Image (tube, rainbow, N blue to C red; front, side, top):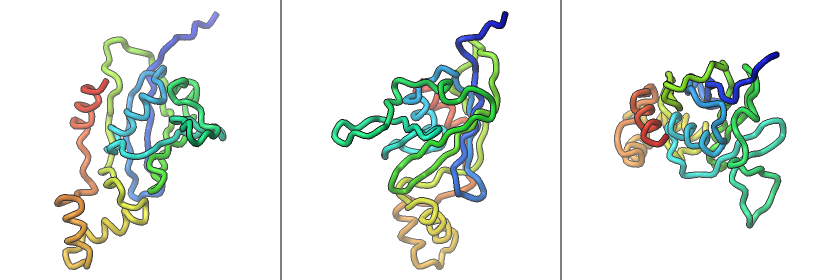
Length: 186
């Protein structure tokens, strides 16, 4: 007889689509995490500010925050857990943030690990590169932003510096800062 545990630890990888070199994070989470909490975890891990709408999509089903004024087929993310969407290693779904800029993330279940009651979850293990600034204009806007920021003679350099509030390092990522915010929130 096989005993199925109620909880596992999921090691997931979140990758921002259509950006090269890639921007990604590797995070450990409880397999019973609600999608609404996963949204907050993804926001913190990636570096977003939760200023826009979002949506999870798997197998043609959409999970998010239903809008009573504009009803559609969106399922309430409060009623679903990640282990209902990702059941085995290599399973994946999409997470879209900011429908205007259209930031699409691929979330993949890399590994199912035994649940450790002593572990602090969620926990960001590692990642690469800085998250694009909010409202930069999607992947094309981000490419233009990086070009302007890297060239002091670019006609938009000063405007971009003012807009972002100073320097921006696209390679910067501090896992300790991410984890401190995760620990404070969860």
